[in-house]
Length: 144
Image 1 (cartoon, rainbow, N blue to C red):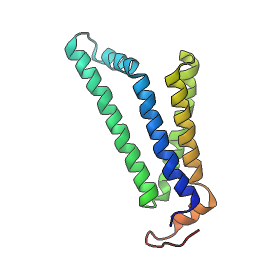
Image 2: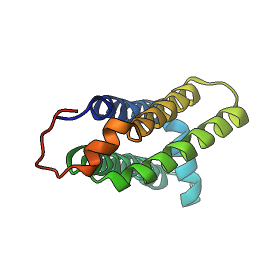
Image 3: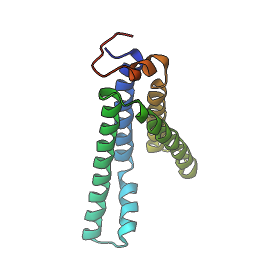
Image 4: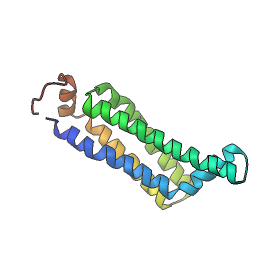
C-alpha cells in the first residue's frame, strides 16, 4: 500500500496537469498567435498549422506528464522526483515572471496555481514516508 505522501501525490499531480490544460484553454488564442508568428505568415494554411502546433504541444505535455506520474507512482523510480522538483520550481518562476510582465489575468493565475500544486506534489515525494517507500522493492506491500 502506498504511503500518505504518495496518495496525495496521486491526487495533486493530475490536478496540476488539469490546471495547466485549463490555463492553455484560457490562453489558446495567444498561444495560437505565437505559433502563427513562428510560421511567419497569415492565411488559412498558416493558421491551421499554428492550431495543430498548439494541439501537438498539449498532447506532448500530457504524454510527458503521464510518463512522469507512472515512473514515480507506479514504477517507484525515486530519482524522477528530482527532475520533477526542478521543473516545478522553474515553472513557478516562469509563471510569476509572465504574470508580472503581462499583468493580472485569469490564465496567469491558473498557471501560477498549477505551478504551486505541482511544487506541492513534488515536495511530498521528499517526505520520510515517501523516501522509505522508494527504497522498498516494488513487490513489497508493507504499510507505512
